[in-house]
Amino acid sequence: MNPLQQQLISDIRTNGPLPFVDYMEYCLYAPGYGYYDSDKTIFGATGDFVTAPELGKLFAGTLARSIADTASRLGSYELLEIGAGSGKLALDLLQALQQLNSLPSRYRILEKSKTLRQRQQTLLNQTGLPLSIEWLDDFPSQPWRGTIIANEVLDALPVENFRVTASGLDRLAVSVNKNNQLKWDALPATPELTEAVRQLQQTLSEQHAIEWSSPYTSEICLGLTSLLANLKKNLTSGQLLFIDYGYLRHEFYHPQRHMGTLVSHTGHQGHFDLLANPGAQDITAFVDFSAVMDAAEACGLNVDAFQTQANFLITAGIEQVMQDALLGGSTQTAMMLSHEMKQLMLPGEMGEKFKVLQLSC
Ligand SMILES: C[S@@+](CC[C@H](N)C(=O)[O-])C[C@H]1O[C@@H](n2cnc3c(N)ncnc32)[C@H](O)[C@@H]1O
Image (cartoon, rainbow, N blue to C red; front, side, top):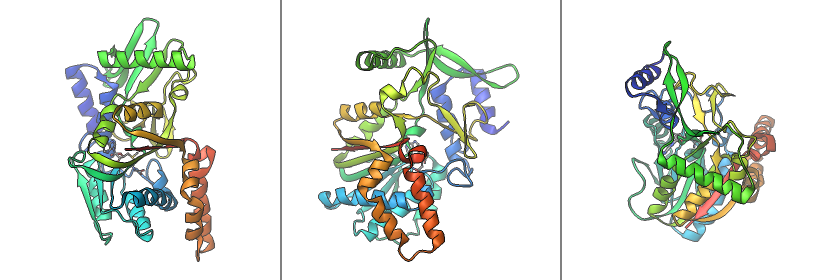
């Protein structure tokens, strides 16, 4: 039994069943032991999953073109990255922006995991680039303008896991059996969850003629509104780019998706045993992009575009980035770039499953 599991079991024995949202928070972010705060290799071929920036430099190079385009309208601008993972996106993005003569005046990172923050610092403190790179403990407290980027961060926000049955709404939770094994449990829904699910069902019924059959299990991210409001608070002018796997509301909460979207990853395999190896495997939920758009509009942000990753990258000029990268390269380089391009663009890979939401103010 790992230390996180011991702690979980002891807490549950003392305090009772742990709401899933708190279990997810614990498993991913418990200081020192949570998945993102452990010394585990998470990203890349030797880790558990590969994100777009970990595939190579095409993603960051193309994102840089999009950011440079917006930045040219802002004049001096700053970049804020949320959840920077290994730091690779920041490094490649800044190098690409330098080549485009569009470096921001400052690059800031808001990273929840102390361990990842240290890894990012090790990687980024030696770039030699003429700008300051800073790590924030909290959202920016002074007015600023520029671009916020968050690649695969929304899917790592803890979510409420709920179940609608003929007799009502359950807040799913984690408990312990007499053999000290974690097991699923259910708690009465909180007023906030009850209201959120009521509104969700009403919208699905009125706008999409969707009614769930019972039981229907899914998840909802109640932390979105405060995240968007906090990001918007001191941003006087600029754009926000959220890139993630997800759906619009009617697809996310489709009657056939009656087991929700939560999934665990370990060693490049996805599986649904969310209670196995707490802290040693990723837990993630797809993003309800309709909810992100609603939260954005509620705090005064404009929704500029919502499209597949493939469309976004084509519009931002990935073909040019590819051609530049191919110049003077070996056959092996060309093969690697071709593989990377396919991973980013093909519908069965990241091209359609991943979406890009562009917001502005
Ligand atoms: C799936 S990883 C993605 C990492 C990186 N963006 C990439 O694409 O490779 C999620 C990242 O978001 C961070 N994170 C999650 N929630 C966060 C929050 N509320 N604030 C800041 N960072 C967060 C995690 O610690 C981790 O670095």
